[in-house]
Length: 294
Image (cartoon, rainbow, N blue to C red; front, side):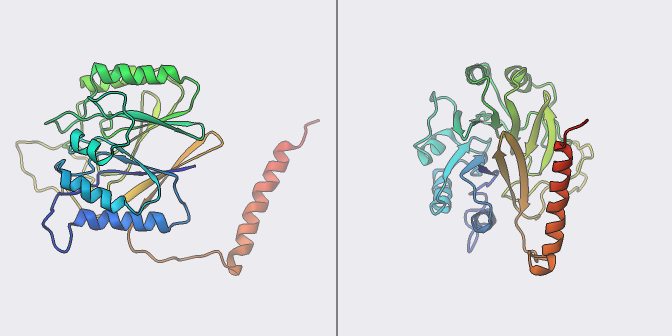
């Protein structure tokens, strides 16, 4: 099974741009590349900041962009989103309560939990006692089912100071208490930072998927709100997305950046000997490992 993850689309950042705003152009490019690629996902998860201001018309535009995508689309809340408008745009979401947009999807023996880490008028993450209780109950109810978590805000300090939380924030502590000891969690996939990042949280692999909207500049120097230093904050680097591959109990994540590039090699007769050699080497090692010892 292939599961696509797109994040931080930010429709409505510049709604009056002509002929269309840059973020719309970027999501069109990502969808076109993804749907034309040989790797066709079965599901798509949108991990927050689907719009820039949470306006109903931005969600309508988002729905139009995905109207021709023949796949189930599962959204998560980001700090730029609005719960009422998001629910209206995705009326089929099966959420267990009206306060938060969190739910679980199970397919091919993999449980995918979507968390709501948004709080009105707050840029950073949130994870209150009610959300902690919901996630704890969900994990306790399915201890033997491999699980991945999709959430907008990464509960880690990545080193990009103006985007990072404080390491000791209460929401991070509560989230850590909810996931601690649950060995069925294979991965945590996030958005928010607008860059690809790989780390761990409570011993669990954690990744941030690159954004659709323009990315945050990779500047790991300390930053001060009181000292303007002219550093780059946002760049025009290509949009990206993730493709998570679940097969035979193994989860592997791939990332693609959507830009113009040339194919430098293709599987032609000239390269068939190389492919055959690689398969022969792999098969030889497999046979050697299976040979009984005396």
